[in-house]
Length: 108
Length: 123
Image 1 (tube, rainbow over the protein chains, first blue to last red):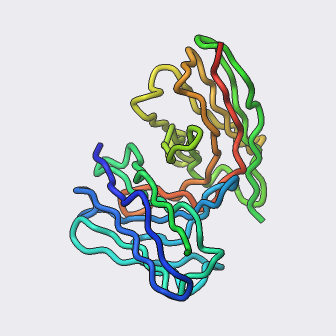
Image 2: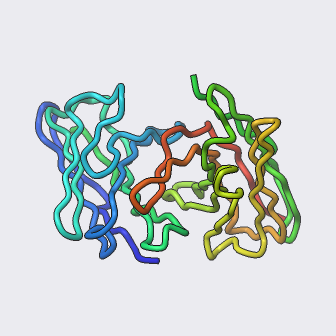
Image 3: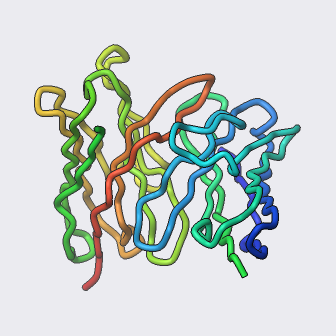
């Protein structure tokens, strides 16, 4: 297994763009998935397979990936986007799952 | 709509055992992989185990931290997922989430989650 590395925190003002990165050797071969978790709630999938936005997720959420780094971008951040964000992938044998340590997004 | 409802969370002494259940509804349970994921207080998410669907013989896989102590199982007739936890340790204290897993392109992801069950291991 390997590790996924995220910045512990990101801060942005309302209306600005927030970018959260996720780095790991396995990401060059496997998809990255992103989850949003608000206090006291279960995680919600916001980006699937690097770039796909599930039904019901606002268009301001987008994902990208290049080499060993995946990025979650929030264009036009709103106060309601303040939450913890986790990236997730797997291993090449598809026998385990790995999560990043999480990034706390603060909307100033 | 998809619903996952966990039950069985409790306070347990170190070395003890506990069983968690997850009642699933709103989808064809037997067709999906299922998983348990946990979150220690104030910490990040940690994958615990998964079980494949019937077509894949309900195969299981575990995180290194729980292998040999935890057992995941499913009852397709009851649309139910279980996690039997033995030899519990203080560091197993966490909220345990049941999640529906989707397999594709070499990895799994989780498209629906329950609200979680709190397991506290303390003397």
